Length: 198
Image (cartoon, rainbow, N blue to C red):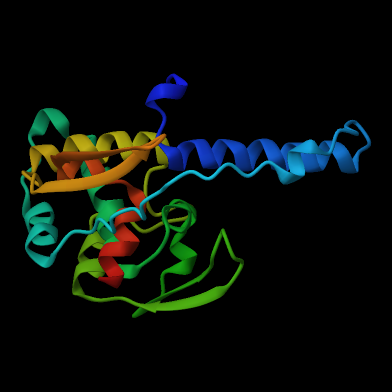
């Protein structure tokens, strides 16, 4: 988690919100009687996060990248990420996707997070990605945790040359910090939905 001096203000605010949620739960269960936490609201400066997404050229760069034979395990990482980019599905929904959800021209699925039933038309790219996997019973793509996907996505995108400099700004206490990193450092599963939208 890092020391207090190195935490971003946005991270500190998340920790405080989590602790307050726990204390509200503890109070409701009568484990806590000290209500001082209710009015604890430190003023911490924050800056909204950059919306990181792949532009069309970067998306095609990743789509066409030849993964070396020794790194074949990254193939399904790329396929799932690209499938999210072309359908707008969350990582949890791609992980839960079964062949029963795949119809001739569309996907019919109940989303994991919101329990909404949605229909998504398949395009040429999403069809091609599905064609790489053998239709059968069960899940479409090999399973992988979100944490491992994010780690592998950064490796994959670095290999594919997704390295446009991205500047982020944030506060640590009252100090504003500017940081520039290559785009691959910011790529995660949620980047796919942003790419789909943008």
